[in-house]
Length: 229
Image (cartoon, rainbow, N blue to C red):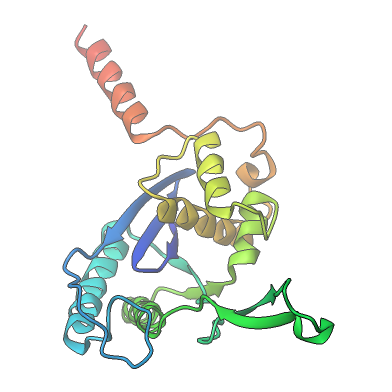
């Protein structure tokens, strides 16, 4: 069975496992246009643009379909979107010049994900689910802490993205971006879920690392050279 993993965002990581070898890539839409925000009190650099988002969703629909069909993927896991508060988080601020203890600590709002980003990510995830349904490919959502615990051994590491890259390098898996590394982790989780007692799963620590694309090409060239000798 060919298992796929998707880390969907403005830059999407895509990875699949076939015959014990992980292959990853990064899907990027390069047609986004910068536009002054038309939203009141907005800090975001890009405003909601229905026409531009429509182009992004249309491109993503085709890109995901090509990826699924070309690689003959049979099951997919997608990192579920975070449950985000638009208002951001409150941060305590201490005023050392205050004469009253009760007024020395105030709270101000920091961060928060923009409406545009949330709208786009949810839209892209919906497109991926739609394409999978059209192709009769089962899909499952997985929380980021769940797949990270399976892949990294810790569901909430300090530098999760950096740890995902390190793990891929240890396993000899070629990656094109941080998003691709996280997609490998998502596919790893799905493989563990579907095949908890597989031979490779039980012996990962001692199993030989899968060959990279470059190593496979060298191996094939050596075989061809020996056959002609």
